Every structure is written in C-alpha cells, then in structure tokens.
Image (cartoon, rainbow, N blue to C red; front, side, top):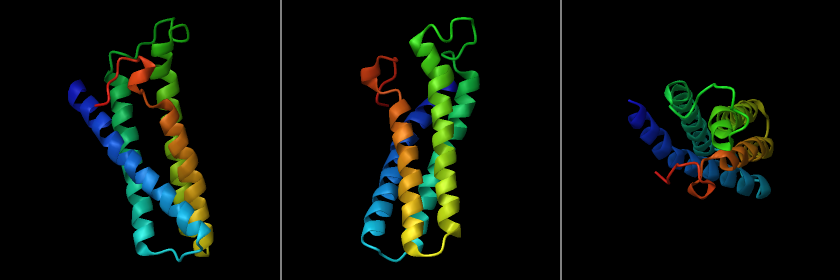
Length: 146
C-alpha cells in the first residue's frame, strides 16, 4: 500500500504543479490585462485547489505509514529525517492553506481585477512554497523524478 500511495503522490504532483502554474499564470496575465473573470478562470482555480488538497491528503496518509518518518531523538540532527518529518509536510500544509485562502477570497471579491490579484498572489506564494520543499532528485533525499 505504501508504494502505491507514494507513486500516486509522486505522479499527481505533476498535475498539481501544472494546474498551479496555469492558475498563477492565468491570474497574473488577466490581472495585468484587466480581463473579465469567467467560469473558465474559476474552474482553473478550483482544479488547482482540488489537486493541491488531494496531494496534501495523500501526503498525510504517507506521513503516518512512511518508513522515512520516525520520531527518535535525532529528528533535528539528520537533514533527511528533518526534511520528511518536519519541513516537507509543514510547508505543504501552509501552501495548501494559502491556496485555499486565495480561492475563498477570489470568490468573495467584487471586480475581476481583485479576483485575479488574489489568485495570483496567494496561489503564487503557495506554488513557491511547494517548489521549495519538493524532494527533488538533486537534493539527495533518495527520491526520484517519479
């Protein structure tokens, strides 16, 4: 079960990243061009939000069943253990909260420009946080691209 969830978490990361980049790019370009907020824009934001939440939920399940997560006395002393026990999950949860706030704010705001601004800022900061804490292969955490 662990390997299936890990593969799902790793595979859906790409969909999540693509949707977040699309939502941020859409928000920025339409905010700057002062376009009207459409149903398509709402759906882009919604799908990015949904996939972010799916990633967090799969990640939380993995957190509690992963052999990489252990709570011995050396969590802070080992960079890899600290990354998987503290840094990665905490940063991803914060990013998901920011993306959720951005989506909620954009739905409540009046005016297309404000909606796009909220999306661009909150989704953008969330995306940057996510990119900063993905276990990339060059970080030597034993994780591959897939």
